Image (cartoon, rainbow, N blue to C red; front, side, top):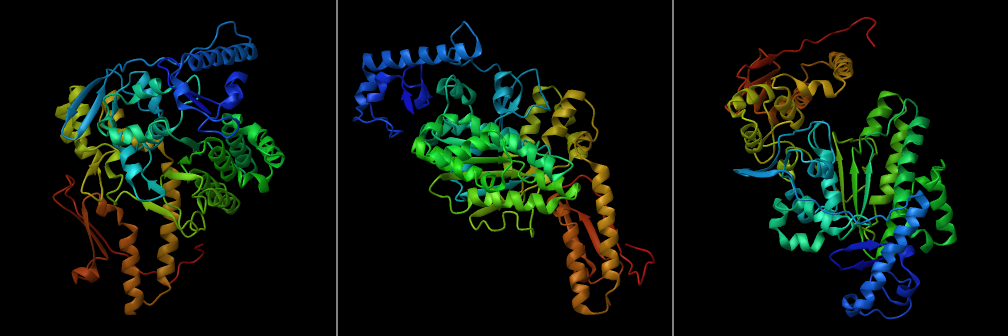
Length: 502
């Protein structure tokens, strides 16, 4: 790869687009060339003439391939359409438009939609000591937008994309206040970005087909490494690029791609995986869980375990952590960041400062108390209250306080599975003698665990063993942090036997 430091042509070109005259030089990013490379040549007119000629040749090639008559020009950065508003710790890029169903950071910024500045997630990710991080957050919490933001920040632009175009996405954002990080990391890495949100299917065969298409698209994006591969690697590359179903090759596909990119660019990769848990949730629903678990465990295990020489850092995003199944459990370098940990806490979801600035911009600040009562946020490890962005944005668009978020998930399926689980649990406990102290202790621990999420919403949990009372098994008591002041008492009866129960 050759980098051109011209204000017009600042970009990265794959070597198969470099013309013959430049191939006498030695690039710092490649060992394909044969003669020593002088960095001073980059500032010489002859060097710039060659680079400009290279751009024209590449454009002509693309025009011929597409049947086009016009040469493709580099993307030109356009100034942000949003105005900047600050309040407390919050920064808002504000416009008259707010969208709830667009999850691309680049598209939101370039199309002039309102967006909260979460760019300090970049510094949190860089400075986090974990090499492989798993962040779990509820549905519709801004996970994909943040992941696409990281992608646009770190990844090396390939023509016609360029650094000037990328830089405009981050102009006047909080990450620009960290020039030490910005200059060192901006547009410096190859990023392997894989979204599994559409990886579905009623059968395992259907899911495999969908995933292999995604994998083929990923490989096609990096076709320029092909000529540097050996004969065996080219054979595997061709099979994956064409979407051929072959387990022994596919399970190492991401590992191999990280090696190809590292060898080509002489720099490690950053891996970003969106909705890592979605395929297994779908597989469980359609009863082919074990096949999916085994495949994806092998795929990500090969990529993330013992691959430090090719990977700089990895971030996986999902709704829940999948435990006790063998999925990612072999990764001894994995660090999990649930909502109750302070790391990454305020970069997913909206804080109260961010909600206020949104409401103020839309002349709805008088509705803040109503927002608190309806959407009573999640409590994080650093005592922040976070609110679901989908609910807040939907309220601003529709101007109605209602349960907007419910429609985004399969509530009926959850209710059915929870009722089935609850019946199974109560029947399981019914066969024990609860007068036994050890069994009774385990029973109360289990009940507390079932409702532990209420603690992070500002409620206090107590069992009758802790309170030295015998009138309830579980008490959920509101604290001063919540507006819903009603407490809940629960008492569970032991069933000796329930006929025909399965």
